[in-house]
Image (tube, rainbow, N blue to C red; front, side, top):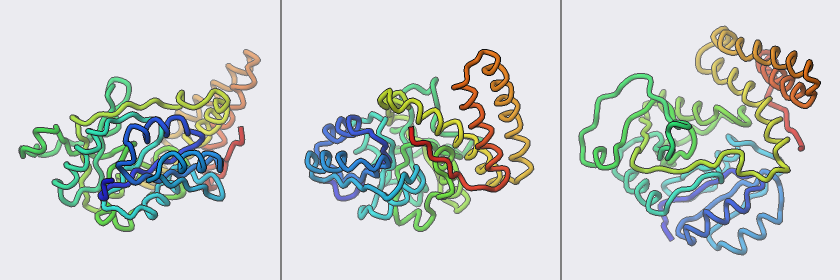
Length: 289
């Protein structure tokens, strides 16, 4: 077993995906899973099947930020790799990430990139940085970035107590986390030669489709406003969230005229999330199904 790295997963009924990942790594890494569905059967099955795996069943659904913080605190290794279960990455890619992390000093976070960047980029560059011409950076095509989202490789000693903001339940917490690290003078890197595949919400069983849609409708909008308010200011956040309000209202009218009351409810949840954040309420909404 590699004693330098702990894999941390925030999960919700993702046993099959986790089994696939853990089987691939063959107990090479200590793994901590925060199972937010509170399903004890998943803990029993995975811990029995994979000896280096610990499944933590919290008292309630923690969301992503709290799950990651719990995983970081529980990890005893130098490095922690934070992931969702809906990802595919090779064992060699993990080894390469460890190699890069051992060579790069005082970084905030490192991340592999999406295999299909036309679909989504998990990093943002707002201002071009000075190109590092070292052999390591050339070999792995490492670029300094301004924000990272998903699949974060961190060093516990470097980030210290700069953990995730637990006011977030879902969405924007990784941007906020990496932005905070950058403010603290820690650099962020995307490693273009190391890639992963992201399966997305479609990887969940169909019976959770309603839960996923409700969760996204409320929390994406709540978290967007909170992120902008926290990192810029209240009035900037109002300006940026206003188009979301207009779109939600338009969709309510259109779906109402179509007699599509299911989507009317989802659109109302979008507004609910926005105004909950505008009025300084916490992200309390937790759909059951």
